[in-house]
Image 1 (cartoon, rainbow, N blue to C red):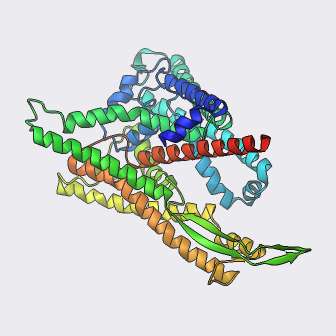
Image 2: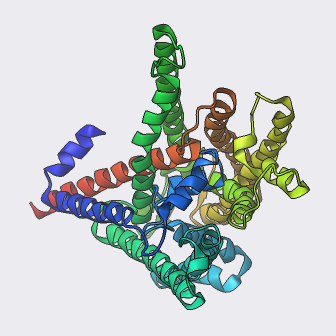
Image 3: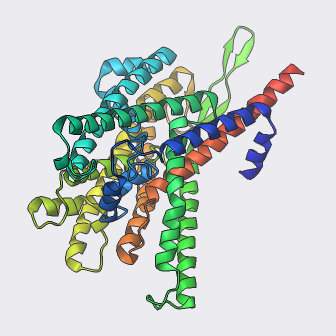
Length: 455
């Protein structure tokens, strides 16, 4: 990995792209520190401190790189764009017109990208308006009793415009990085936001579980054991994610020989790569977002989990911070919410894979090109074979995702080891790093080919 990066820095074209990407990320992180005029960031910070880092707002804050709890210019960050992209992918199945656009080459993809941008702006307005009104009632703009209604509406309007503009600007930054930098810009921005929170979280984790003080009475051996366990768990999760992302099943395909004119064509062997983690981190994001959405809306409206009401108990069931809590056997009953979470992750894995990989289409293309899977007849038998194989692979990948996402939750409930970055965040970070390195390697290969042809 480091050798690839080192060799890339020697190439002027790639070095320029890397510097451009770095400059964009610096601007992003600066914008995450500048607060929205007229807001009191301490309100959000106090609100987040009263919840577990695995709760709804902790999950959202990790994705925004802490800009949400600071109520900065980029408080929404790129979450509206991610949501709109997911919605558009789902709509391509439900709306035939969008499906046609998706298959219409570059022109269709540009049109879908344009619609995604408009949807991002719409979602940004809705989310920022809900936050401005909800948190405004909880003191985001100070004591509203001492200001007039026109001034209060102006503060809300300013916050909505600022957050919407910030989200749109980050979307533009992401597209510029994709075009002029290295890798997928949106993914890289999301990655750098998650990484920005990791040092503080790791420091807090070591202070609470490793550091020896007069009050905790922790021994040197206990502190050393805790440090080794923490490091080992993090390294093991990262190694497992690398294996999960790199694992694939290669289906051999043999093409029959045929004569065209005086030439003999075909007779070649190829393969169809089926990744074990075919859907990436999308199922975890889908499941987490779906379960955390009622919790976020309720907390914005001042309704907290565990207030004794029926709705409060439902919120505790949906909230990840109450799962695996063995300190109270009554609270441990809310781990049933994890069962719902696991079902959603597996269901979304199958659903998203069905969007990105169509066995019927693949089988037909193999048959049209004169190919066949050894031991399997072309046509319907090939389709059934691919479907059965894909279902098995998707289940294995979904279980792997579930393991990675569950380990931090178990440690949070059993050992009270809370960090804002969990399995989901680590999957994103590792996946984006590997994808970016592959992109750099591909750019270097293309450059070598160009140099060879020029000579």
